[in-house]
Length: 323
Image (cartoon, rainbow, N blue to C red; front, side, top):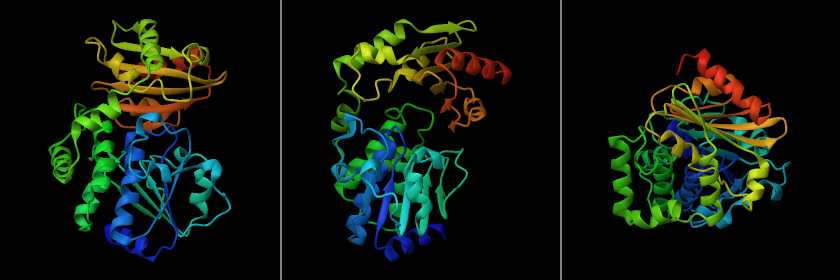
């Protein structure tokens, strides 16, 4: 019934807005552009797309991404017939776009995060899916939508990046089956991999090397973390791109590490936490601070300085007996 409601909602809406989450990654952007392509091909309708923070250079290759606008370019008093959030685990993750979301006549929430409480009129959430892009492939197959090459490139990018190139534990036989279908349409995996993982700037690579070099370890090296101060980013010519992308995974890759996290200074009293684990449920740690995500990959924003945030996170890991 929910899938039928999605179809009816798209058909009956004259103006549609697709929303990605703050600090966009390959899944939210690939899903947004992928659904834009699917709706264009199957309903002959053009959607609006909104990005609520800086677009990473890495994903500028995505088909239709040039049609997306920044939230600053939107009239926040506008009322859309339909707004669809993609990979937005919690409503506050779409930042100022929440104002548009609240005004919309109908809202849809398509996601794969198990912490998503279902905040829209229609909620299509599959926590067993590796990525929101995987959820969209399933929807396309169930609704008999035509999957063009443009759609396939976008959705493959979402699946590739949220599975860490199919090496994370969220990769299932269904994930690989859907990826294979996208390859059959014409996606070239080597090209997408290169664009996503082998297009980093010199400054970013040197920055990550610097952060790893000053990482701290505790609990017999079971916990690894590093702090990213604003002054560190400035030292490496930070230009608004996500220089920390993949950094937590590098710390988790150390053989002794069970839990890895980075603390990024947003301002003197606010820090962003990104956590990864090999087997421990770290979503329960992030939920204490109002964050969430997945069992092995979660994050939160903490109202504390970076040094204080580290103490708070370590204390919660201890409280939860995770290490």
